[in-house]
Length: 400
Image (cartoon, rainbow, N blue to C red):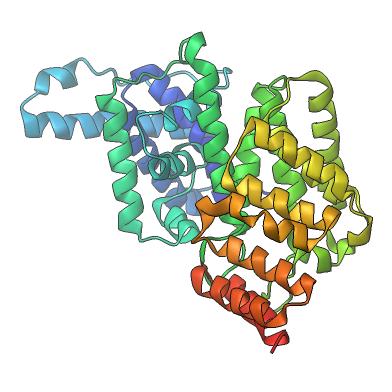
């Protein structure tokens, strides 16, 4: 039988243990600190002593003891010994109830900023350490620690409890959860800064958490759409860069390197969702990704269908980036000159490198090589991603 790596086991157990301890005691901040100490103890002890027969139970017992110690220390500092005497040392029983959705909703509480929601979700639900989150997000450990500490304080100040939100608030809270998972995935699929194009650990974690959410909410069309979108997008990752790390645009990718199993799963998901659930923005984006995934060659892409889907997406989720993508599709259907004339519709993104890159691409298609070169170089100056900078500079170099 295959022996699982201890770090994978701890990552899987972390949200279950935190859910059990918080459900029993209710103080998220203290419980989260206690669980982190229990995970650290396991990481130090298990390699030498062996993994216990019931790792979740072991972690829950240790976390419960650590929580008591933390409260005892706090009580000593603040002269609140009476609170300690009311603390039970009996660890909570291991429940068969899956509280991961409740934990996700708590980590994405509306009182928190988006960066804090991302950090807390990766820590509490994803089971990543502070150092792992810092490496994934390319920020200092101290910054991650501060975000998590502030998030826990804000949750406490907001009076949030480890219970599902009222029925009237669930849809709004789920929308935040989906948004945060998508933010995590996007940062992993196309890093916004730094030398790497991908941060695979982030996109993989987003897919894992979204799978978990889909299992709990199988009839939620937008959760299914989000998972399908992630799978269909991530399926192209092996072909998105060369062995040297250079970016390869969609039209030039070797499609034999795409993950066909992930594409098939994504297409099946979005097909079922569109047939059975109300349409939403993630489903429409997944449908667009499915059209790309179904094309064996770039020339086979059904651009009129993609243009129609972007038109629907603008109705459901209007925004400058959606408009920009629709303009790219428009160029494939009606020609680059028509699309160039519509670029002013994305004026909210005037300083974004994507606008300059699209303008450069369209200018190159019209034959204006000098103007295209200038726009490629401008786009390269605007992006913080090193692979994107190199790609845009290379495109400009070809037009010299």
